[in-house]
Image 1 (spheres, rainbow, N blue to C red):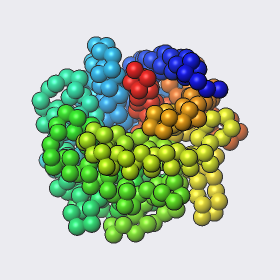
Image 2 (cartoon, rainbow, N blue to C red; image 1 turned 45 degrees about the vertical axis):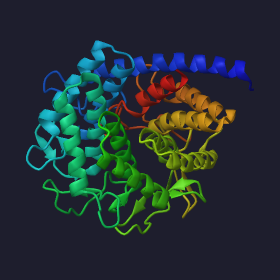
Image 3 (cartoon, one colour; image 1 turned 180 degrees about the horizontal axis):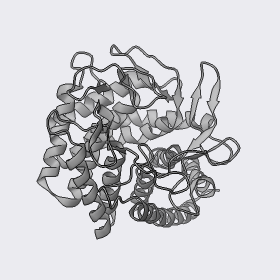
Image 4 (cartoon, rainbow, N blue to C red; image 1 turned 180 degrees about the vertical axis):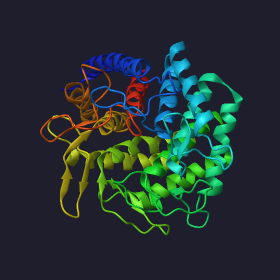
Length: 402
């Protein structure tokens, strides 16, 4: 397959389907997740679409809801989207922002009282990301002020001024803490690729609305962290876990993060106007996209992780990995002109339609296993299952097709 007519036809269909899917995802969150008794949004909804009573509410979930509805409003100014964004902002501001020590709590209980008070830099990054997007929608100067305050706080408390990079987590009062992990599956290390990628993503979005030179310098330093430490151009993958002195502590490959980084790194270089970094990262993006072939199944789905130390392929296809593959491969087609990447993006979306979409209740299942069965016991909404990767995939592809 090929040629201009084929591509134009494919893009037309792709955009139409992304517009419909974006509306469907957002409608799910509007119709099923609003906590009318305790405020904000339910902390957890199970795979059968039942609200889990008393579930904690997470800062990442709430920030991602704020980002998603703000970004959707900025794409298509539907007042209902802005109303949900307002709701998310109010809940974050009232319940998650630590007015004494700064930053955001990891979780609050179902009534909105602080629960896990540790300061994950990852959570503050997503809050900056969300506040920046919401500011574009509402133009409330207090929103921008809070985003800038969080940026300055992270530089002050988390940035390693001697060796560069950001330390992973702290106690409520920003003192050192023993357990730095985002989740039980993560290595307990001081510098992680995942957090750095989302700090970069947050700073890039903040720069769009606040083009400050100190902020720009932090983005440059973050891009250098990726070029110097996280990107293994020989293997075409990202290194995930490091100690404070940038000694590598893991060989694990995360296919979803690899393909997500291909476009987020380029976006950052483009937004700050760093042409040299953009050119370097363009070749990196193509290299990583090539390496992704090993993680693709015949049905177009992208496997979750691979551990080369014991040759163990984690044969699950998670929802977020597919969403990032859709955008990442589409982006690589744009920068390379190689049509095979457009076809990989489209084939991945076809896989999502066939295997990941919940055609009964709406939204996307967490994932499927190697036997094409829906992974049991996983959330439809929760601390990690949020309307972010999939809404963003829709929004990015709509924008890029134009």
